[in-house]
Structures are given as structure tokens and as C-alpha cells.
Image (cartoon, rainbow, N blue to C red; front, top):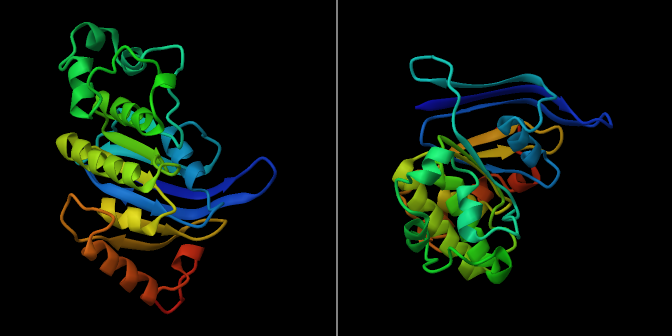
Length: 252
């Protein structure tokens, strides 16, 4: 199982702006970690660095096993938009991330996987024929179909209506509990973070760093409307009223 260790001493943009400074954390195998911070705090930049899409930084990002051997985890990235190729069918979009062997001898046929996420009969459809929520279901299934050991998610449900977003949160929890990848989930919604995560990392404003690492001790699955989620939300903001603005009292 893969352990993620992040130690970013400094990340500076080409224009000289320092986005991240002295940001350190680790994530254990199968852990669901939410990342919350103010706009412009560098949350997407952090995911891009971890994914290797951006390698310009002073610091280190390591994947290793419990036995300290270096690991090369299968990584999936779910972006803010579904990013399905419009000229490919749903099945072709899913098969695009599989190896030739996986495509020729799938453990579970794509139509059966689609049925598991409520998309029976959609394999031959094109993305433009699907609703926004259906496209996100395909993108979510694509993220899990390779059975990643690390899943990066950048506000994947941000533009959806509340009922659709909640359906996808529950589906995400169901898929995550089946294969238990390590998840890093960026969100602006504190309630969403509490409803999904084992831990929440709160970031400061630029240059961002971790100002609070909070464990969420609630049983899965959870709904954003659960009384327990609301209770944690209220208690947290009462204790740290400036937390979502990237600030926390020095004596706390």
C-alpha cells in the first residue's frame, strides 16, 4: 500500500508570485483527505505538483510503501470539468485509460460497470447526449476503472445542483470503499469536506501552508445534510471563525 509524503519548501510561479511555502503533510494508504482553503491558495497547484503535471518547485513529493520501498502508484485525476472526449462514445472514453490487455480481457465489462453507477444503456452514447450529472458519473467511473492507489480530485462537483452533487458524493464514497485508494479531494465547501473525509487539511492564503490538520471521526457513508456533519461544521467555525479565510489564531 502506498504512503504519500509531501514537503514543498517553496513553489513560485513564473511571474515571481510565491504560491506555496513550507507546506508539509502525509497521507496513509486508503485515507480520504480533503483540502480546504481560500480562493487562490494554490490548491489546484498542489494537486498538479503531486500528479507530476508541474515539477517546478523546491521540495519533494515521495510515494513509498510501509516497508519504505519506493512506490510508483497508479494515479487518477478528476478535474473540475468531466473532460470527456466528445467524439468518443462513453465506452470508448472509459476504455481510453485502460491498457490493451485490460480492454481485451476486462475484469468487469464496461456496460456492467456503467450499470453499477446508474448509467445502464449509455455505453454507445456520446458525451453531448448526456446531462452534466451523467457526464460526471462517467468521469468518476473513469477515475476508478484503473483501480488507482492515489486519486486526486479538484472540486469535481462544484457546478452541479445540490441533489445531483449529493448523489455523486454518495457514489464516490461507495466506489472509494470498494477499492480504498488514497484520495486528495479539493473543495471550497467545508460541509462537503466533513461529509467525505477522514481528515481535512486547512490551508492559509498565499503562500499557502497547512494551518490545521483535523481528523473527522464520523462513520461512512455520510450525507452533507447529516446532523453530525452540521454539528462538526458549527463547532469548527465557532472555534476558528476565520478558518475558511485561511487564518487561525496563533494561540490555538
